[in-house]
Image 1: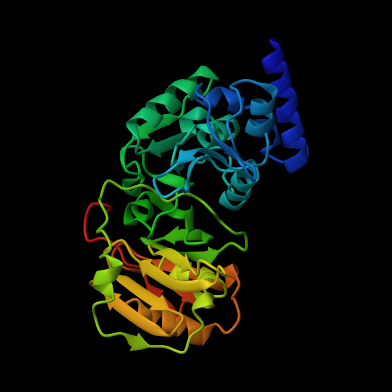
Image 2 (image 1 turned 90 degrees about the vertical axis):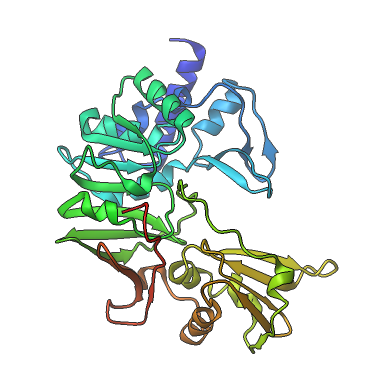
Amino acid sequence: MSDVETEAAALRRRLADRLTDADDPWHDALQQVPRHRLLEQEAFTVYDHIWQIPEHLSREWLAYVYSDADLVADLDEQGHAVPLAIRPSDVLTLFGALDAREGDPVLHIGTGTGYVPALLAHRLGSHRVTTVEIDPRRSLHAWRAVAGIGYHPHVVTGDGHAGAPGEAPFHRILATGRPAWLPPAWIRQTVDGGLILTPLGRGIARLCVDGGRAEGRFLPAPADMPPLITLTTPAPPPPEAAVRGSTPERTGMDVNRLVTDLAIPLSFALPDHMLHVRRDDEEGKIATVRMWTLDGSTLVVDTSGAVWQAGPRRLWPTVAELDDLFPVPPAREDFGISATLDRQHVWYQTPDGPSWPLHTPAAGHS
């Protein structure tokens, strides 16, 4: 065994012992799957308070690969991290909630480097695991890399929203990319009594499927996972100047609540929303918040209480409702989802409690 493999094996054992007990059903997979062999040879950036590019296969590089940290590939045009792999402890949280057992056919959405399907294949058997990746280059790399370490899950290149109808049905569906709605195809491809586990907004929903219906609550654990990429191009938001051209409404709401107390409920009620915060150059205080959704609906609100809206949907009524309903931040597990093949909504406390319909596209992901 080379020095690199010896070092990697020691780091894997250390990571497995740190994150799991010896009798944990995922301990052996975490200890045996060589994550470093799934990463492409070119150097990648890692966020650890500062951006760094460790030399490939160096001790520092291996230490990052086997640390409990998010690995990122690059920065996008807006300066945001482009995720490469989620941290192992988050993977284990998902696995624990998934409750997959030997013999369960599992569909994984968001192949990425191949690490998650490799762990699943180690525990459940390669023939029980199907994984979907939208990026053909990453899909091919993952297929080759995972096969190179001895696992052979079925790797499908395609839009994860469509699932894998050719391999269905599944007992478990696990997404490691965040959709803006629950794809109906996932419900259709899950057996009665099966589970769907998916990030949505700032939470992870655990849904039981029965008779074409999926329902369940969000886990207490936070979630910070990359969006699930779709083949459908979202509508661009109108320029802020165009939005401000209309007559504003007025609000007495503290604009800061959009990025503090209301961040979690907003992420559930409008899971396809994005925020841009403009701060005062001198003091760094929030000056303006701009919010938009995938269909191009947009609002702009500033600290004077002026609210401008544009696009097919009016977003402010939802924001105002949440502001009234939650004077203090609610817990993630107080929310849930009920979904059928043609409609779905997020609810608070009970399925009959306050609720917000999820905006789903009319076609292309059914």
